[in-house]
Amino acid sequence: MVQLAEVETVSGEEAEEALCDFKSKLYRFDHDSGEWKERGVGQVKLLRHKENDRVRLLFRQEKTLKVRANHVVMPGTNLKPHSGSDKALVWSAVDFSGEEQATELFCIRFASPERATEFKGKFEEAMAHNDKVIGGGGGGEREGEGEEGEEKEGGEEEAASPSAEAKDDDAAPAAAAADEAKAAAEAKLKAEADKKAEAEAEADKLAAEVGEKAAVKEDEEK
Image 1 (spheres, rainbow, N blue to C red):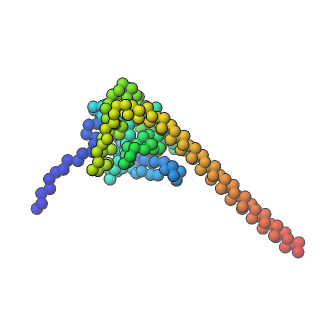
Image 2 (tube, rainbow, N blue to C red):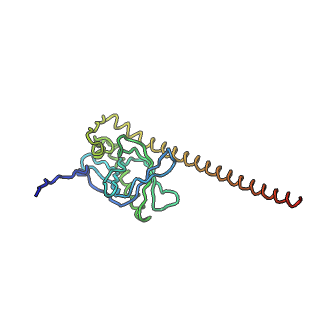
Image 3 (cartoon, rainbow, N blue to C red):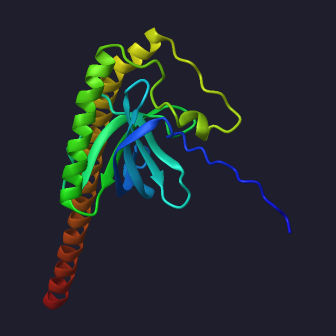
């Protein structure tokens, strides 16, 4: 009988305290298609680091445990309800779940409006907490610490200088706002294009009906 040695599983969350842990479904807005793409069902957590005291958001897909969202909860983030659903929330963030950091527009959906409201409250508390920590110069690790290196197998984490980190902290809210504005503009253009296409289809249908009536009338006159 083969004896297998126990292997300790490292999640990257060992040095963090979970402030909340909710099951949910995550979506990412795809700017190329202008549509929401599902990132999976899983657990969304707000984690406070025990050393640098910063709070980050982490979403892991269930079963695979793949990281689908990983970013510091930045002060000034506009977390708002998704139009048409009181169970869903939308926000923009500089995300580190992929190979490279990217500004993403996320939507998260919970099982009930009460759970969405509870998460929103925890998120806002985390923003207020990080505002004090970041404003006071707390923490020396780059945004999204703990998971970026884990997802890049065989790679090393790049150290960020204090000046570069401060620059990223200042730029993130502005980038998030710009991303939301871009998404809103794209959605508006898509809606206008869809409306135009519907109007053209209706006009073609009306023209066909008028043509048929004219042909019938012509036959009757003959």
